[in-house]
Amino acid sequence: MALQMGAATLVLGDLYGGANHNLILPLYNPETLLTTDPEKGFQTIIRTRHWKMDAWIDWQSFIYEMDKHQEAFTVGMSQILHLLHPHAHGWSLDLPVQMMVQHRGGEQDDTDLGVQTLCNASVGLQLRKTLHHRVFNEAALEMHALGAYQQAGKLWPFNNGAAMWVSGSLNLWHALRLQLGWWKTQDFVTLYGSPFFNTLSLKNEGARFSHMNTAFWSVEFVRTLSRDYVFGAKANGYVTDAGHLLLKNGAIDPAALRHTFSFGVFLRAHPRFLLKRFK
Image 1 (cartoon, rainbow, N blue to C red):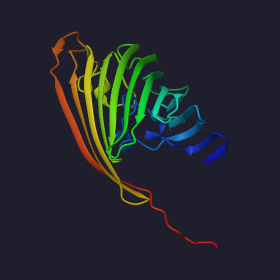
Image 2: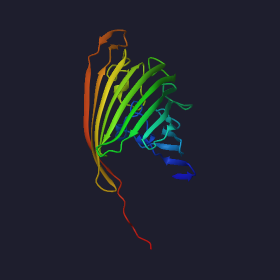
Image 3: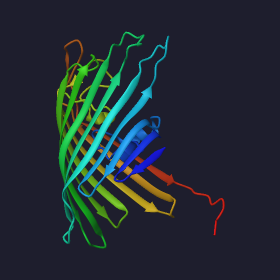
Image 4: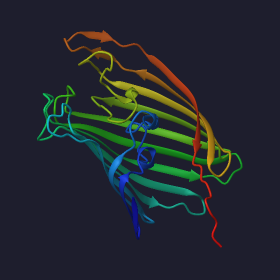
């Protein structure tokens, strides 16, 4: 259910979630849309000429008496302040601020995991240039400083972490998008981003990498077939230097340079059916 009130939109129930939050890649991996349930809760969206804001709470798990799992919810905020609007020359400059807090546990928690509260946040600058050209349509450059904070719990072997994300993109022929990015961090864990942005090992429990330097590339092709159907293909690649793997028992294991890539095709469909036309 959505209610429009001037520049604000209030949403209750199924949220305009996932990629609609416009979170940067290290904070949200678009492929998560295929592996998680739709977001449900409450959302406030505000759109003005100089400011855009999206704040939401996604209630992921309730608990009742005798339940053997934790309650869980995520609170998020994504906003963009337009410092410079595109004019005749097509330049725009934006200040994005993003944050997500995930909380697990509660008063009726019947597990031994304890309360866990984890946070990701970022602040950055985005510079875009609209190109009035048949081939080159838009170029963009962005830089973000990120932080991770474990306010409660012992899921992470550290409580604080920081990272830097730099990315550039180019849109061609209104259908092809090229992107290059660089990620540098130490002691950072992303809540909903790709595991390639984590310094915790997913294979060895309690182990973490000494640092993380990752080069990222992406090629995406999207073609509109009709008003309601879009076809596309996308390829991603990561080249990661993770330094040394610090094991839980204190041992140090050298980590080799890793090359990873993925490729997929997709079809977006929003079919509509005319039931009756009124004159």
